Image (cartoon, rainbow, N blue to C red; front, top):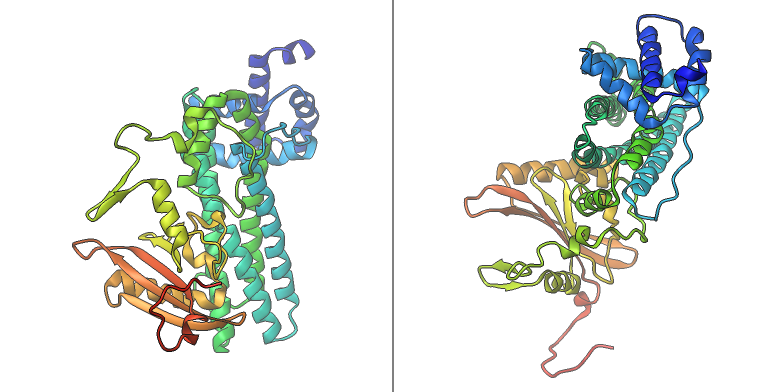
Length: 425
């Protein structure tokens, strides 16, 4: 056996035979000892190669997807996670891992809120627990940005090396997580509607009892099992294999393209220095490409950034798909913004009780029924004016929504006139 396990191709073959046996119904206890000996000499790339060979033999992605849950459960019982490579802060893998840590924390918050919901003694306690569960779920929905960076960037680079198995299988598993989170959102929405209306439990719909806390627990368990299972697969197989495979230049390309998709719950740390060619600040440095042209003139990106930062208002742009795509960074923002919200659904950036208002505004703007909505509030001693403006192209097609926030506290105190130059202190 030891001679067999000294050969990479033989290790992959044995691993494949063991996994096929599990899939055929062999009891996990019967293969654990054999598998334990094998995995001590098997790295992440060999597990990926095993899955790829199974697909090449005609096993479908659907079958591999069901098999990977089984063998991942067996491997989890007998293996320790591989040691984390020492990476510069901000390296794409460092960011993926920190996002996974944040997702674990959000999953723990969700489970705690659901436990409180099950034990809630009265309606007020149920409302409070449900709102906390919804807030945690909003954070977990951010996983879509993590997955899209993985699917559209990391998988694309791995496929250059003929590594296609992980992309097909893990993408399908990502979609399972997305679907499970969506189902949980539906169950939570049902119980929140019932709690607000005081209506009795409804039977006969797809969730049977949308206001039943037990239904929330079951949906949460399914979603968290899928989510945390994917984190294990990334940490134990995908990311170690990717570090073994990709060049530093390719990691630099992934780093430079990642802002397009945004960050999940956390921002990249400072410290990683990609190859110079991958620095997005170097992109488009050719003659004539550094200016942004408008019908009324042109400015460089640096000048445009300075303009946005210097405006006495805070801007946030939400695109046609309801995703946050841009916000201005001034020294005195009324509502602080994290760059982790870039690419996030705007509905998930608001507390649960205000989402219905956000949805109505976006729906009215998209349908052309309205083009502006404004609010004014007292916020920590400041009088704040908030406007939502529908943005449309020359044909009237909806492009997105611009949020404009301004602190009017000082302006409301002005009286008379000031016609001579006088700088404010």
